[in-house]
Length: 315
Image (cartoon, rainbow, N blue to C red; front, side, top):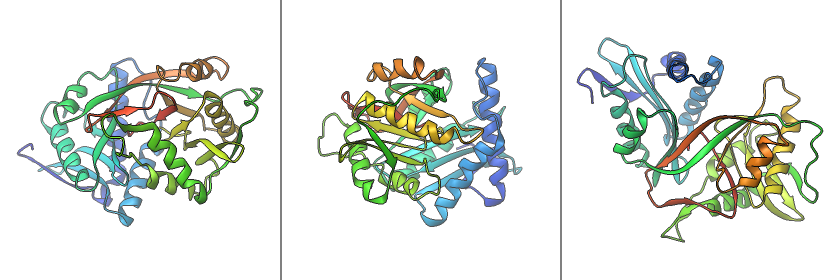
């Protein structure tokens, strides 16, 4: 670590400055790369930091680390949720002007070491145009597992859902079915017995007051897909078929359409789900925002090629 720097758990008094740092660092870098702002409003990053701090009060496997210089300057922040098989890391942000001074590396190493006390591995998403941080992540143990394409928008209300698929709000009794789908989607190429669960994250979202936090797609009595918080960059989707994925997106859109500022965000594996990708950009009229690299410290991680999978920006 930097000799003039201390890495500790985030001080609750610095919650808003931490959110401001994340917003500023991401948006300034995106501007340099001629990209749109990552976080147009402070309330987005503030909600991310506040949510993880709330989780941390109940479970120490969720934590936010801060890097503070000896003069009291908040130099960097990283958010980690290690409740499931793979800890989800991100966002991580270094104060503008502080890059290249060891802050990012020290924060990453501290976050990974702490997360591995609780879980098997750590995952994150890296913006494809950010060629500066990708070598850093690789050097502290992250391998590129898959390339994602982020698309965003709200499908037209006139778009008809596929026949034969029913979509309902998920209940706790559906948790096993949802997590089983995730375990089929993300796995180890060499160990069939290795299961990548996202149970804790799904369960928390099912218990949320938001009616569209988790939706299930049904073919008769069988759950063939689910989506969780796809109005947010931290959401994800898993489905057995293109039709199930389409039905989930359209059902979520019908709910989000009632709110002024909600749209759907999907981090799509375009090469594995070309039909769903074409539908999203064509009939659903969604727009490509960026490309990302999904990285993980578990090098043998693979995505199933017979399922539709959309990841989250936090891995």
